Image (cartoon, rainbow, N blue to C red; front, top):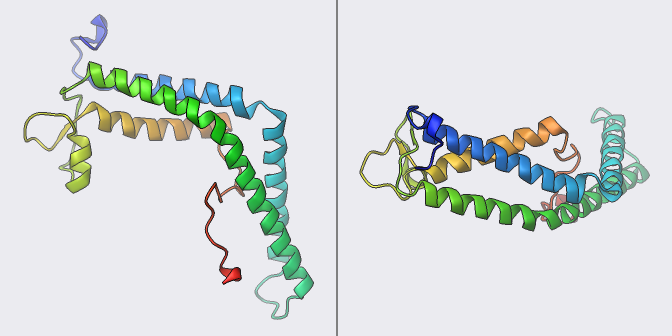
Length: 193
């Protein structure tokens, strides 16, 4: 049996087990990220440079408000330089975070494999709605029967992992700085076209 003895008679035992394991996995992944990334001096330096550049860019853009028709070319060049340095710092931060991504992915694959073997072909939850198309294929993955409201472990674990890990990062203060939106593959700059 996949659930502990004290939860075996409980109606939502399987669902709560998947949610609890998802929460524990998120905590372990954030601990790994803290060990490999967040506690290092280079991460703190990159994060502070991104914060400074974002504040400077925001100040420069509000100073050159749309009410003023003529903005000096030197001012636009300064704004472009700050934007470029912000993009480069964001890219460097993403590359820096990339190294722990492999370890975290390995942990997630192992936990998913374990859960998949424990809850294979088992309904762990009932959805309060009838999902459509591709969502139904994900939520009903590996289950027998035609009841579209049945929810498999994979779908519940996926939803929990996304929501719990994101909120845990925000709670612990590990969410990306507000200026770091570029990532590894930033959007092309419309000014260069």
